[in-house]
Image (cartoon, rainbow, N blue to C red; front, top):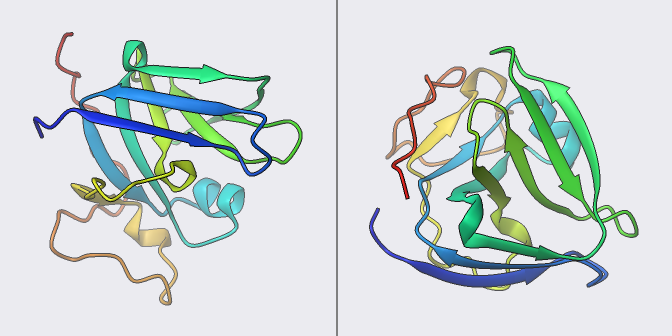
Length: 145
């Protein structure tokens, strides 16, 4: 993808805001059980950006889990309303994994892959038109910025 995105968003209560000005490195839907539990639904839609392309204002809380790859994944959220803002993965240093559902306009989002289909609930239909992976594919190196 070569389209630069200019987007903004906020948590449910508005205490945390985000502004993005950059090109997504990857866009995916994730059906892992952690994403299901943290979102309360069948998947999370994520867009990965260079950290330098994302500005977040407001106080954040965080929660870290170890993924099946052995890397740590930290979810950042508003301490007041619990709204998810972004994530950071130790296997992707310098990258920010934005939860696109909290953006004001996410019409540009188009998943390039669907992850953890082995955990996808039968009622959560996602597109078969992109690569679907039973787990997570190897993490490619992000293009330098």
